[in-house]
Each structure stands twice: as C-alpha cells, then as structure tokens.
Image (cartoon, rainbow, N blue to C red; front, side, top):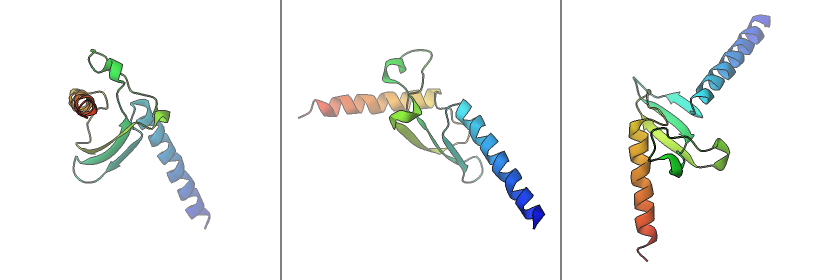
Length: 99
C-alpha cells in the first residue's frame, strides 16, 4: 500500500514539472495522439506583433486560445502559426465590413 502512494506521488510531481516546462514555451496543453501528432493549446499571437520579426503571445488569461492538432514540434510563434493567424485576422476584418 505504501508503495502505491509513493508511486502516485512521484507521478503527480513529474506531471506538474512537465506542465511547468510546457508553460515556459507558451504551450498550455500538449497531448500526444500518435507518432509525431499532438493536440496542443496555446495563446494566440498579439495582432500588433503578427507583422514583426518577434511575434509575442497574448496572456493566457485573455481566453484567446489556439486549439491546434498537428505535428508535436509546432511552435506557438513559428512561421506556420504566424501565417495562419494573419490569414484568420484578414478574414475577420474583411467579413466585418461586408455588411
């Protein structure tokens, strides 16, 4: 019985340490769903930094979160995310003026 409690404690500690490591690069949730295929959640990029060389993420408390399914090495501020979020912003702006 004591071993089960110790094992559970070690697993919880390891999980919390892994979670803090993901938070350092902006990823809020990272779940592997197959070989090099992950489900990740991370804050969106600030609109004012989308066109710069150094995009920055919004605060995780804003609730503006990207729900991503794809390669596990995806970066929240990488080229693919910048392009996808620029396109989404352009689409949002153009649809706002179509009324």
